[in-house]
Structure formats: C-alpha cells, structure tokens
Image 1 (spheres, one colour):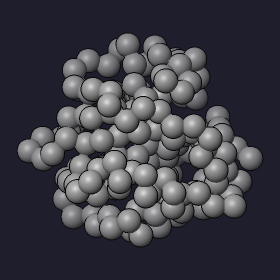
Image 2 (cartoon, one colour):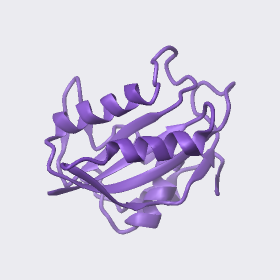
Image 3 (cartoon, one colour):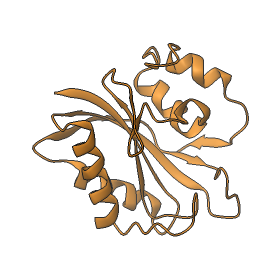
Length: 158
C-alpha cells in the first residue's frame, strides 16, 4: 500500500454533501481514506466570478498504480456529476492527486506531485494539518515551508 494525498473541491450545489459523496465513492478494496483535513472555504483562482469553493485534503492508502488511481478519481468525478465545460470554472466536484508516496511522474496525462500544489493555499493549508513536515518530492521543502511562502488567496476553516 502506498500513502497518497488527494485534494477535493466543490463550488456548486451542496458543496459539503458533494465532497462527502465523492469521499465515499473513492473508498474501495484498493483505496482507503485514513484521515481528512478540516473543510476550507476558499476563493476561486483564475476565473474569479464564481462561487467560493469548499475544499478538503484526504490522506489515503492505496494499492492502485498511479494511472489506475487517476482513472478511479476521474470515474468518481463523473459519477458525482462532474462535467468539464469551462477551464477553472464552477464544478460540482474536482479531485486532484497531490502526492503518491514519494514518486515523481511527469507525463502528458499525469503529473505527480500536482504541478501547482505549492502555489495553492487551498491545498497547502489542509496539507499542514495532516503532514506539516512532509517534504515536497521535487522542491524538497516541507508543506509548512511551502504554505508560509504562499501570499493572498483567502481561505477560512469551517
């Protein structure tokens, strides 16, 4: 089993119910969520004229290989009503693979660690609840160090 971290976000409908539904659907014989961060309300990045997001980070154990994990998360997104329409636009559910053990993968289809996780307060603030001393496998800085370097991006713990 490998330790992974996933970021989940929602800004349409009942955001918390959407996140909890996705978390239930992620569970399988090959993936078990072991811990959750607090929920955070966060301002949208990029396309700002949309509702605020509710975000959470999940720590999990999995025996799925990285591409299998990506397929699993995308399946859960579709099953919970995700429709990709506008880049960075409103969405019922979004699931990103942040970290997969200490692996570094950079392909057209999959990038681990997540390419922008170190720039996103809505990822780093929940990450420091779960693993403040965990090093980023490429940047070699802890989650806490990365979080303290992020400027702006309003977020409030719920």
